[in-house]
Image (cartoon, rainbow, N blue to C red; front, side, top):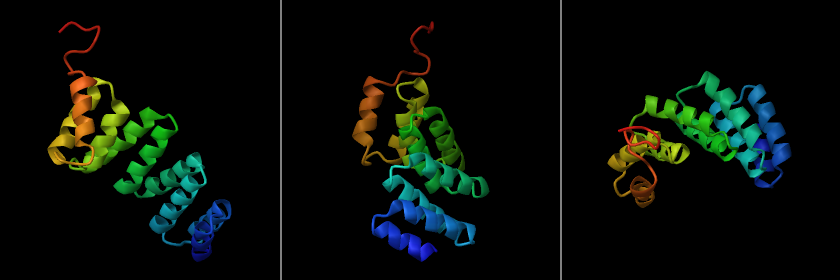
Length: 155
């Protein structure tokens, strides 16, 4: 089932690939490998909610899979659920405070709130010359308020 699902995915038949991969998962094929393939097939087929459902199911039994959790957060954010995306990313940084990608994503998801600033700063500590360093520096300079200087609050 898994091999057939992968083959169908390569042929561009994402709907049938999902059916075969889902069957492989139910039949006991390696959950991590199968879930990643399922999420990929669903994303390619523009079925983002299905991808989130597969990722969530896998993460409920394997909560330390930070790579899948970051992907799930990105999918949630693209679906407009920034609150849930931020929650998932906070779980990632709770398990790995040195995950630069998670801090970068949290910066984007939380911007322009002051809550994004510490994640932007942490990203720059971890990746001062990283792929997103200039973007994060610009956010810090232009959009992210200091926690004590929020609009409508007395300093």
